[in-house]
Image (cartoon, rainbow, N blue to C red):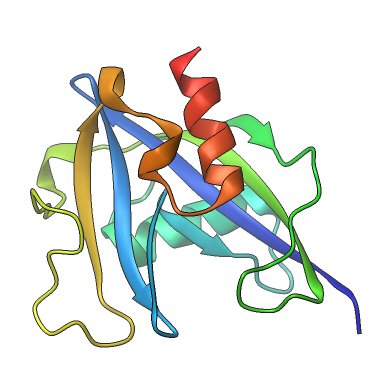
Length: 144
């Protein structure tokens, strides 16, 4: 069955840096923006707010729409799913309190579900940092 898979992601900046997440899910290593899947009954802004609470332990101070997918992308996990991702510029009350690492995939055990965060200088943010095409498109848009 063909389905639409809705996702919402946060673009978080602090002191000239952009937050990215490195994750290991279903045996796939990925670098992407923080965020994830929309749940039944949520609006998309609610999704990105919930994801910030779950992943970053912070309630966003502000959320502003930045980009919505405008090309076809099949899910890397479910090829019958078409991804539609919505990206928001998110301001957090305490971005400096996010636990970050310095190296890509700096996991403790490399087990499914591990996640770390890194700050990348906005001037060094390039599409090739990201695993998936929609994140790559957003990185290109952020670079201008």
